[in-house]
Structures are given as structure tokens and as C-alpha cells.
Length: 202
Length: 202
DNA sequence: CTTTGATTTGAACGAGTGTTCAGATAACTC
DNA sequence: GAGTTATCTGAACACTCGTTCAAATCAAAG
Image (cartoon, rainbow over all chains, first blue to last red; front, side):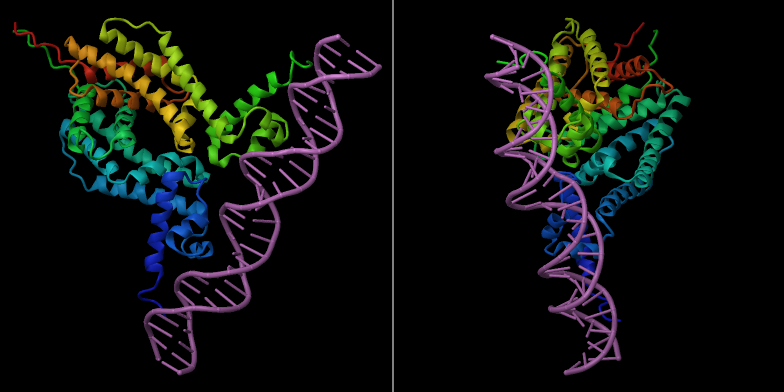
């Protein structure tokens, strides 16, 4: 058995995924050909099929990997008992994590319709379980009176939508830094879900 | 000059745009062929070129039409002096308008990268001018002390992102109606940008 | 050096791409 | 009816598509 160590596949495999990620994010899954990906890596199109059974799997693996990374990174975060602290942790984590991998985030949202039905179901399940974590935080906050949220599910979707927005327009090197953006968004999220301060009647 | 009234182009033209809109929204611009569009309309592919110079223009015209509709509908809305009332008007208008045309909204966001540079610049300009209207409302509110917003531009982007989120998950016939969604989002937007009630010190 | 087998090439497959255009069709005016 | 012309067909053009596979290549093992 030759070529078990130092095999080219250790190098080519990741490069195929990197090229596919970058090209899919830039031009879209349907607009990118296997020959383009191969050209980026420096091989012929046929060689790609040592690393993926087909183009669809290439897309799915990228999205699946991203969702797994997201859930693993989230699980590694501290989960404070206090709902307000937990919500702050979620908000800051979400902005930072997504900012660090714009291409993965982009294709995981934009290319959902190019997944086969089974693949779509799997990715949607992972996404749902992430959203559920935020919803659970909101429900705990409502239970102890820290939050004033009539519909925790809708509020969770609204908060995630707001935070996802950062990725669509924020670019490093502008007037505001990411920590500043993070703080501004945390201010808005906190206010949006918080119970009004009990008025001080002398 | 024959065929000036009752011409087929009065029928086929709109049908081409409708088919293109629906197919682009469902499968994506790059994944839809001119032959698919033609098949939907019931003509051969060549006939489409009586109604559009090329595929790119078909996409651009749909997006341009959508942005023009958006700005015209917005301009037709009342613009109250009171920033809080103006913000409520903007919020409710945005949710309703976008809910009524999910396909147009979807392609106007998803297919930006398939526009030629000049076309992209034009659409972006229109989008910017819409966002600027919200930012202006926020600035007026800050000026009179009705809002507590450190960065009106960032807050405007955050609010629009939150409201856009509705289109990605809301479906008629669920547990909550659109007016309820509208109300819940207005509650969150109002709280997110509002100055805290001045505490009542006896 | 020879053997081994992982890796890659390069050509081929059948199908589909956007676009053009001469010619057929059919709805209108006179 | 004849004449006009907007509209549409159907074929063609020159490519590109995802995928397959026999043959070539080449690094490591013996």
C-alpha cells in the first residue's frame, strides 16, 4: 500500500473545498462550473471527483460543516443562568462568529434552494436548533420578568435577522470597529426585549 | 401601420416578466434558462427577444421596477412630523409592502451579484435612498430627544434587517396573522430606539 | 530498481446554454 | 378581398455543462 502518508489528497482536498467556497460565495452555486473550481486548484475537472461524488455534495458539505462549526462554537461558550447575561453572550457570539466567516454564512443562506430535499431538511434542522437556543433564553427571561416579549419565537427570529444584517454591510476599516458594532447591536437587542424599568413612584 | 391595438405583445410581454420573476425567485437567475421562461409562457425561446434585449435586462428590469414601486409607494404614504409616528408608519409600511411581493423582494436581494456593474450601481442607489429615509426619521427623533440612538445609520440598517427577516419565514395561515407580526415588530423597533422613560422621582 | 496503487490527465459523452435570423403566420388597416 | 407588419417558429451557431473513465504519472514501500 503506497502513498498513505504525504498523499496529495491531504493538500488537494482542502484546496478544492476552499476554492468551491470562495467561488460559490462570489458567483453563486449555479453560476460556478466544476472546471472553474478545478482551475482555481490547478487540476483538471475530472480530478475533483476524487474529493466529492458530485457538485451537490460539495455544496452540502460546505453548509453542513458551517452549521456544525456554529453549533460546536456555541456549545463551547459559557451559558450564564441570568437571561440578560445569556442574551448578551448570544448576541456578541453571533456577531463575532458570523463576521469571521462571511463566505460560509453567505452560501448557507443564499444556496439553500440548491440543496436536494433531504439535504435541505438536514441543514434546516441544524439552523432551527440554533434559533431554539435564543428562543429558550428569551423564554427564561420572560419567566423571571427580565424580558417583556409577547412572542419569544418571533422575537428570536427578529433578533437573529437584525444580527445577520451586520454581515451584509459591515466592512473592516470603516468608521466603526466590529466591537463598536457589537455594542450598538447589544444596546438595541437589550432594549427591544427588556421589560420597562418599573417607574419610581417616589 | 397594422397591429397597433390588441397586439399579442400586450399579453406576451407581461407574461414573460411574470414567468421570469417566478422562475428567478424559485431557482435563481443563473439556474433558469431562456427556454424555461419561454416554455412557461408558451412560446419558443426566440420569441422572448421581442420583449427583452437579453437575459440580463430581464433581471434588471424586474429589480428596477420593484425599487421604483417601493419608492413610489413610500412617497405616497403620509409623513408625520412626529418622529415616533413616522417610525411607526415606516415600520408598518415596510412589512406590508414587502409581504405583498415576496418574489420581487427575494430576487432584488439575492440576485444583486448577477447585475452588471452599472446596473448594480443603479439598484444600490435606489436602495440607499430608501434606507436614508429611515435614517432621517431616526435623526429627527434623536434631535428632539424622542429616540436614544448613538448611530442612526447603524440603527437604520439594523431595523431594516429585522423587518426584512419577516419575509424569510412568515407564511400566511400560521398561528399569527400579518397584523399581529406587524404589531410585534413595531413594539420591538419602538423599544430598541426609544429613549428610556424619564424616571419619575416622586 | 521494481512494485504498488493513489492521483491526475485528457478526451469523450450527451445534453443544455444565450442568442440570431430567415421564413412562416396571423391580426390588423384600407 | 389585398397589403402590411407585428409576432412567432424552428433551426442553427458556437460554447459550456456535469460526469465518466482508460491511460498516464509519480511518490512511497519493499
